[in-house]
Amino acid sequence: GNIIAGYVPATNVSSHAKMDLDAREIREFAESFNFESAEFVYASGGNGLCSDEDILTTDESDSCFGKTTADAKGNSVSSSGSIRTIKGFATAGPSKMTDHKWYPIYRDYWDDEVYADSFVENALTGSWASRSDAMRAELAAKGSVYQAVWMYMLHEMEEAVVHCESGNTFASDTSDSAAHRWDEFWAFYAGSLEGADGLGSGEFMWALAEKRCAQFATCDPRGRTALANERALELANAGLQSTLSGDCAGVRASMDGVVDVSTTPLVQGLLKYVYDADPAVNGGSCSSGVCTYDEQWAEGWAFAAALLPRLHQCDPTVAQLVRDNLDVDNSAGRAMKDGYRTVKEQIETTYPCLGISCSDVGAYQTFEGVYEGMEACDDDVPQTSGSKKKTKVDHTPVIALAVALAVFVVLVVALAVKLYVAKKNNKKPGGQSYRYKKTKNTLVSEVKDDDSETTASDVTHLDIEDA
Image (cartoon, rainbow, N blue to C red):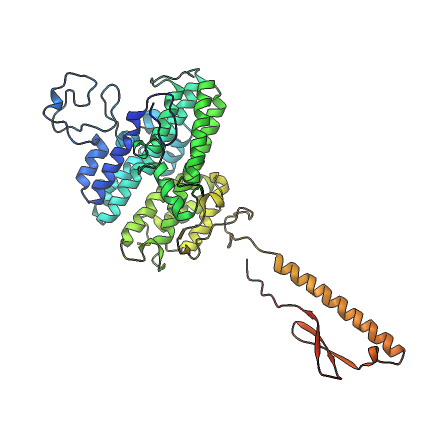
């Protein structure tokens, strides 16, 4: 198949990758507040409507065969002519994913078999239809990709494992081929808009990682690519080889790695809007007034919703804190009631459980520097829930103080011995009269003859702040 963002599929998944065209149309319609058209593309597919000429086709594999001019032509069309839709992804759980690892966790957290669909439809036609247009647009667009498409991407990897274990380790464009299902995962991770080199402008997880790496300094310094995407590509290539060689444990290991790696840009998105959506912050991406508070709140909730089931699995208390601060239906009636610092620090405690690190996530920043309080946590410090600080304590000042005090004591003892000996011999040491005084942090010997001072020890006072 065609190369997709550096990945060479063993099978043809070009049509699958075009699902990102639907995502782009949904986002563009939503951003122009044309929610009716966004709903149509979400539920029926994009690429406009079948024309009068299109519906005359006799090709049964054509998406417009047997349709009317009120039907979608579709962007991602299967070999049978059926149109793939993001709503189809969002509602596939009950029929396709109940025996998988991740879907039941998300379903059970939300207590909703079609939780992703409920989220998107609430924004387009449901309970959030009365909220601001800016809020609805962000919820619909991001919910479509980071919940519906993301879970379906995981579904394809799960199916690759299943078919590998069934012995279907051949490369074929059929749905029972482990390699084909694995290729489909990558099509839904990167999409068609990224091109062969991954330097395009897409809508899926690849695009999100690229956007966030610039904001969190987690891009490969040798080029534009996000480190998360480089790792995802490595895992994708390894997983494909495992499907072809029958190494089913290797397929699952690659899948587990992809889940964690693709969580990184979601966490970065969450942290960005934990900061930006805090009304107490005079900064962030909205400091210029180009976006609305509702927009930031909605983006924060969209990222939070995509992560909450995993956060809850790691620490229910942290998940509840995030929900209390970002749920657009929360009782506080505003975002970030507990402040971005508290929420950020508690999210960081879940990193080991999420399979990511402080260095993976980085620090939220601009070219002018890191936003205050948004520094990266420290991988050398255990990220314990409830801890007040995540920065590494520098023990160097403490050690320096201890050494200086030891020197001070040695000097005092030495001088005392010298005075004792001089007194015993009934003479002044060195033929001079000395007196000693201790300043706040300095032992000073004063020579009476010329009033000059020589410092025996100069210990700088250190205020060791709470770390």
